[in-house]
Amino acid sequence: ALEAAIAALPQPFRETLVLRDINGLSYREIAAMLDVPMGTVMSRLARARGLLTSDLGRAS
Image 1 (tube, rainbow, N blue to C red):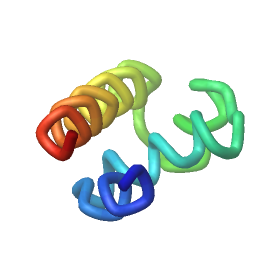
Image 2: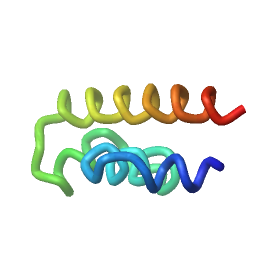
Image 3: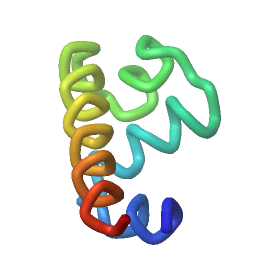
């Protein structure tokens, strides 16, 4: 269920979540890799986690 929920995320949220929570990169590293401000990384990560929580909550 978790893999399906991650796969269903919009691409910018999915890539940020995977880079942080699966690959363990820092916010700074992700910002440099994606060429976005660190605030954008934090925002995308918060949105991705919220969408996952919402999606997984509905699935159970």
